[in-house]
Length: 191
Image (cartoon, rainbow, N blue to C red; front, side, top):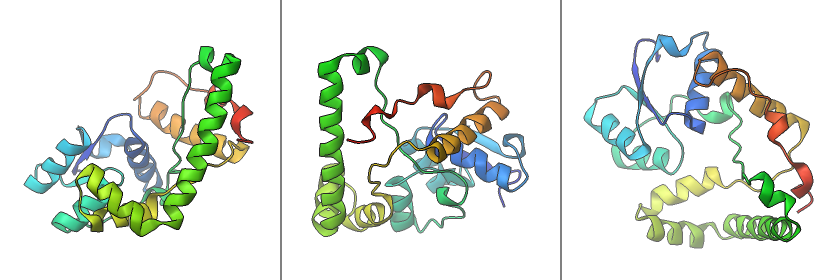
């Protein structure tokens, strides 16, 4: 459905990874579409004006496009990409005992906040809509499908992210092969 079409996407993002993997799954490559690299807000504008045929993005942008202009999803990340979010810290930070302890505390607080958000969807959706100035309907849609509780960095998670790195390498979007596992620190899994 996308062959020969203009597709807005934020370069280097998870949406870019999703696009690469969706194309790969369909037996296509990036050269089979015309990528238009835009920031999310500009992607929305390009889609609404008809400057692009499709837009690879994430919530809340997907939910906003669905609710405001009736956009239809033609593929979701869970069909090809992993949809994981990652937290990144520098080597000096994780090597510092105090900062490392603060990170562990942060992850525990983040896990508690994520659980609270899931358990209080109406309250959180309303507050998030207020904070981000989007509709409550778009906010609720976002958080119904996009609350991600923290998980351990298992071999399966690492392999899945390696697949994404390989897709970027294959598309020549990054130079050379990336060994994702070499960037993983599992010391915070228990937090």
